[in-house]
Image (cartoon, rainbow, N blue to C red):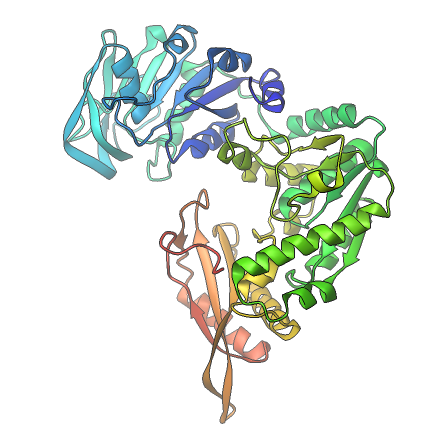
Length: 521
């Protein structure tokens, strides 16, 4: 059966399902649909027809995928999906699958197409009325449709792919060989919106205002009079989840904020100020810096750091929660990408997170509440704004659970933490002043383990090197280094070496992911 929470939302809103055939853009397709105002979920191609029907979908999208429909055992949809009488859009592999299952012909293309290509469009096609007659699209295929099934007509083509799009409006079937969901297809959003609003005839009733009201009412009903516990990290997800539960049950919620001393500059104070004073939440802040630093003393291996921090977090949380008496419900900030990556809705009910790993199992709860379980990260941020959380919290940079411990190469000391906090603060401050903070996916400073010779005021120095890391990304699975203007980098470098003691050199990381990761450890 479908994920219960997702199915409950789906039956209240117009819903489009994405059937995933292993494509790398499965989440991105769903995000684009939701950005267009339509609720969307991702389910595996192997989902049963009972599960698919339980969502009462108004349309279905087949994703791309790495396989060829001509391979033995290639993933295929249940043929009954074509008998549901709702519009279907096939993308890349999804187009080839549609043709293959409906007696068309898929062949190896004479010339592979990878990357941006020119596209000629028939603007009378249902999906292309608002698209330029000559446009560009992102291709990624070795095979293509050589012969369309009966009833279809071609609506777009490229130099090496004569049938780059096809449609049979009488049966509500549409397909494109290119990827309309990626930014490299400039008019792709128009194609997706045409499918949703022209082909499916949807109105678009998905927004964070209505979701907030529905979710808060649902939480209030589920929790009843029971007491609720939340492990609050101060990050976007845990903050928004905690506030939603607070709005539902008020003082029945107790939030424990474990300050492990590995946060960014002023972060702990900001969390306390906003949620305790502005929203009057029942927040307990635990100052545990000394015990975390004691456990981390002399540890240099990044995985050992993560393990120590996770274990110590659980110990502190257990100790504090025992002081509070019986708490029956636990709040987790699980978001939809976690669910998709854990099995497309088949994930376990209790899911361990980096900052609360093992807590539900160890402490024991009657119920787990996950208010953000069906939301993407950008939707969580919009929901936070809807709930009135200040922008500096809502748009806080992604931050690893182990905090600055994995942004310091080598052992952790209080002095190194102070150095990194100040350098990181300068970096983030200048990016924000330049007005490009929302254009960069993630940016932060790293205290490398390297010290080098420098000169300040005619005196020799032997101090630390700070590395700056900034990336652009849509999904954090891949990322490119951000092209920050050189003048801005110069300003940042100048401020750090002048304002932060024991730093005499700044370097900028220009490595993409892959081969590098976004974080250094």
